[in-house]
Length: 518
Ligand code: GDG
Image 1 (cartoon, rainbow, N blue to C red):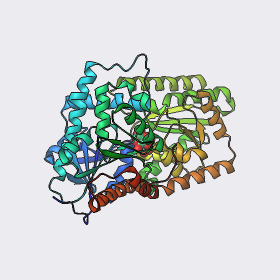
Image 2: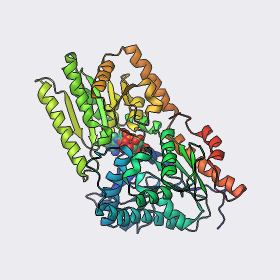
Image 3: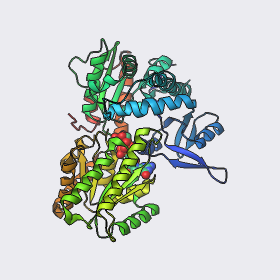
Image 4: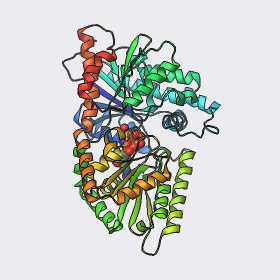
């Protein structure tokens, strides 16, 4: 069926985790809970403003029940058209707990202890062939089924490292009838990091991505690393000196940066909600007259929670004047607790926090508090009152907490930001830079922030807030959709050849944030 370019395009988002999870309440009705994590934060508000179909996997028994009652069809939930796919449990286990997390996540954040881990075992191979690939195929089938018969242009946006094989299966099923445009939320390291994958897996993964029309990354550096990786491992892949595109098997695939941001309006609204205000008042009582060092992350080795504590310990040792006058609060959201490395990491965090409190506390002062749980209003409330926000990941695609923090904070707090967070390219100049491995340097930066002159704090905080307000998440989303539409329109008005990165580049520079990530 010829595509109707007059009508609004059909935008399909595919992501492992959907925007909501469902629980059945005591009255038998579904309670809808907003999902945790950056991707959901970024996409939920957008999906409400565009006509979007969102395809995601069931996570909970409530989700599965919701899916059964929906008879596997898409249904509108709080303005979002949601379709759930229900992978078979064993396949999902291999896809999620063996391949996506930890294997791909660890490769892309370079978290391995290489002499010991990982070992690619029969279980890994089984998880690739009978877990990751089938689950990706299921997503592609659900998308194909949902768009069947439409005469609208189809733009499919598979999100993140769970869905690298979706472009391949979608191309098999839809041919050139869809613009396929994955966005990769996490860092893309250079070719060496990918040595860990066996050859077949590496080739299947990379060549699937190269069946897309264009691929979005958080920074120019990630996009360039992808180009290098594909060129290095795929016979016949050429970039011809370009940093933002690659040709493979007759398709020219753009590799572009779309730095993600936050929904400024929605977050500001959240600060005015009664629940957030209650949380804020409780936190103000907790901090008292002490300076507050805050961190907000998932419990996650790449977020570097542990070295943050070690740096805090160093601060208290080296600068005793802060004892009794500073308070560290870590709001940690449990995630991936089925992965052994995450359980161990949490144990290490709790042990270190316990030691700090045992070593330094007195009857009036508890130096650090770790709060575990999923409470987004509390996170936003805490961000309003920090004096220092510690964001020190080993590697991070963007880090939305850094952007949310500087937006809502009303104490002219200082941002301590790792040079390996994607956000560093936008916010680094006004933050205090930390090298995530340098515990001593991080402690020095904490001291510098705690003793910074008020005028300097104010100047930095204002500049940071303005930077974030100018690049809202709508721009991130619309620049991707605009690029896809431009490509469809130029295809239908000229030939059927996929657009080249060169032709897209001029268009992109006017729509994306223009931040240099090199
Ligand atoms: C991935 C990439 C990239 C905080 N506490 C709770 C909660 N949050 C919110 C934060 C923030 C989000 O979750 C976390 O986003 P991050 O960007 O910091 O981190 P990841 O989850 O690792 O996100 C990352 C992002 O995708 C987007 O592309 O920036 O690099 O790793 O908004 O405020 N959310 C809920 N409960 C909480 O207690 N629901």
